[in-house]
Amino acid sequence: MDVKAMILAMAALTVLTTEAFPRRPHAKCRISQYKTLLPSQLRAVQELRDKYEERMLPNIQKCPTKHLQQRPSVHQFTVHERILYVEQKLSLAVHVLKNFSNPELLEYVSKPLHMLITIREDLRHCPRTIAHKSQKPTRLDTWLKEFNKDKEMETQECLEMRVTLNLFQMLNEDLKCTAYMEQCDKLAPRLSLPPQVTTAN
Image (cartoon, rainbow, N blue to C red; front, side):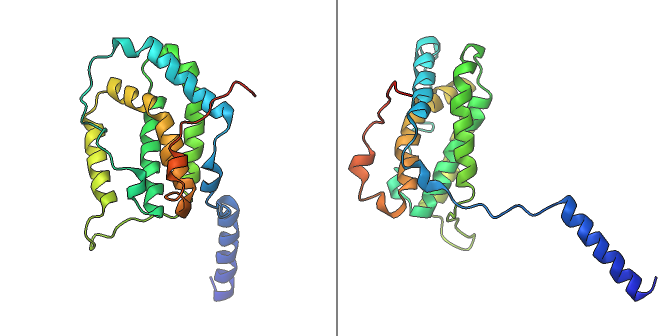
């Protein structure tokens, strides 16, 4: 094959490859939209918690108090560290809800699960801070190490309890603070107020 024919063949291959695997448009960070959640989203989370407390909580054996409990506040991280902090907690919640053990609660799990997956995917397009190996471990590095170790030590039953009972805290404090970026620390007292769950559509 001469040079000209080879160039034409490579060009044709490039066109075919581009058509078969088109480039995805650059996705923007959409974290700011989570400064508030829709009443319908809050109701879905509240309903799951209520049904869980009614049907599951009375029968659960005592869970270790130290696992996944000793956590730093979201305010102790930098603006970009908060994104990874919340993303890790969201990933755990998604995993737990996807594998929920009680089939009676599955109908109440679906809406919160869909919401958490959407939020997690949005956060993955946002910049975050990760320490390089040559740097000293940050507070986030330390938390990630302990978080991963602790969740491996929890039973499925205890993971379900912790995730379900702490969804509001994660969404109303951790996620909301992350969404407010640099303004979070100034608005901290206001952000700590419990979310208002209404019956309106």
